[in-house]
Length: 239
Image (cartoon, rainbow, N blue to C red):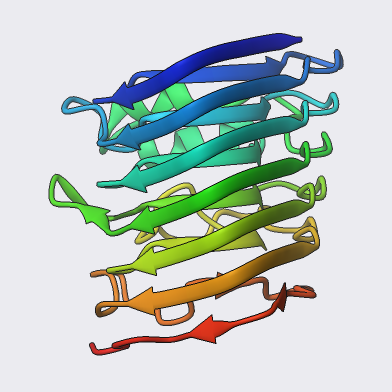
């Protein structure tokens, strides 16, 4: 397991903290305890690599759980906190290796995608997920559990006094068909289920327009999302 305890944790320009499973082994869990956590931006060379905190199921093993506790948690400019299941390496290579060879660094192992994604548990007094990155407008700021493969995504549980989603920032648990927001569907990908999404908050505020990829529903799960909140303040949902 990985344990991080610090007053301030800032992760920018593709700096990240990760735990991953390799082959059939299980990933360790990742624990973060801080007064303030801020993550922003992407790699200037490979925009698909965000700043953030993640547990990854790269093979067939179980992905680790992610526990984060903070007074203030901010994600902006395409940063992400997530638990992810990747799909079979060869399915991505045939689509992306010729157009963007650097993406092969993101790709899992042969026969990957069958592992189960880890759960993500967030406790933050103030939580903000804001916007997208101008280097890669399709790369939204994201707090999520995701699967690209046949393995199921983990559950996402959020407890916060104030949850602010702005300018296209997204909180979700989902099954996806492409590693790129604009990319073509990949054969045999997206067969797993998204996890449960549970939000407990005194106030949820959604402001600003959609991100440039057209995301219109910043809080949700296409499979199942039992959200709970005591106050919902949509604010200005222009766009």
